Image 1 (cartoon, rainbow, N blue to C red):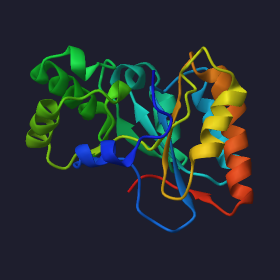
Image 2 (image 1 turned 180 degrees about the vertical axis):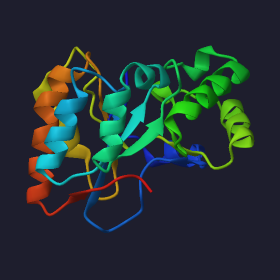
Image 3 (image 1 turned 90 degrees about the horizontal axis):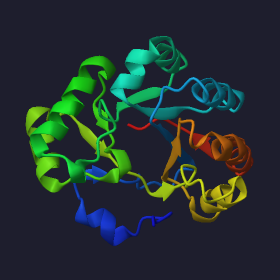
Image 4 (image 1 turned 90 degrees about the vertical axis):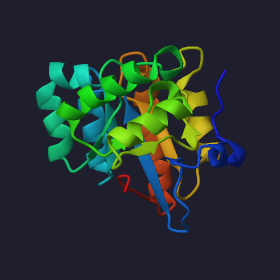
Length: 206
């Protein structure tokens, strides 16, 4: 079970984390988790380029090590990179020190002040320890979950999730992964085309 649109009360509970931007500007923030990935990263970059759109890629350290050229291509195309741990750890299943050390290990490669916990699972104790180790980190969650990782739904349902719930200032999650690619390839172009027609722009986190 997962929520496509995160309720405001949940956002207030984690007050030190970024869920969305309070703005009346027509801007949406596209984010891509789990890459770089041979099957999907190039597709995402080319699709974003067609719409002059920018995105934020939350990368896994071990995937960066395996695909350094793809990682550099993300940066060279003007997109933002963020830290998604070194081994895609679930914070609810790890000790605070193991979890934070894995993030710091990834930071040596990724070098970004933006961090997103895999699965959104990070205990407050881990958050506190991370910000003690690196106060400049900004912990990023999301306000709209596309559901592209869910192999039980279709691309059409994934697109419905986005179209129905997205408005200005929202941070949308896609996945730069093998598992998500079928739904991603269907949904990302539709998202860019539809919201571009409505006058939205797509920017990196700030």
